[in-house]
Length: 233
Ligand SMILES: C[S@@+](CC[C@H](N)C(=O)[O-])C[C@H]1O[C@@H](n2cnc3c(N)ncnc32)[C@H](O)[C@@H]1O
Image (cartoon, rainbow, N blue to C red):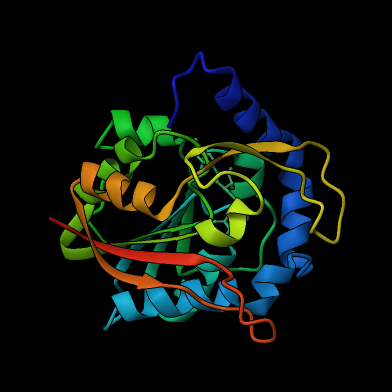
């Protein structure tokens, strides 16, 4: 969620169009080391924890990309809707998946129109899908789509690991995709958020942090990601 005339936001959107095919290949070929090391397992586990009785439970996988998480949750018998702003990702050929449906929906549209993918959902999952700034309007739109007792589960880069040698302060950074095993056509601007920044964004969206997960790399024991589970206040 960013102002439409913000050039950095425009470049972020442009990067997803340019990188759609590379992204689909990277996810499906297992070319993202951190995913193999544990972030895929971490988001599936966090979603499973948030859904004690998943059979038939309505779930929204927002910013679903080519849909791997939607498919994984559908295998657990949840009734999943995958939504993403980029048609080539949502429509990427996939194995037959009768339990899920997919929709092209941009974040701005979801903020502006509560009738779009209205739910209610017992779970809204956002796996590495919050890349812009601000995020509170979109998180508030997620909160409005929750069924009573429903949860929002977010996986994002771990702030301390991602800060690297840079300042530990909210702000725009640049992803080069150098750590990925395949080339990406375009670098991507993304918004770095400190832990306090995430907690503030949840509060601003009317969400209360329930659980904070920090999966670590099995060999290095360094943090792989941050997993936030939140309830509507
Ligand atoms: C890093 S990918 C993650 C995809 C997927 N959740 C996964 O785990 O593979 C980020 C996704 O967010 C989507 N996205 C980013 N900004 C968006 C926006 N403003 N509206 C809708 N989707 C957006 C992109 O199209 C992309 O599919």
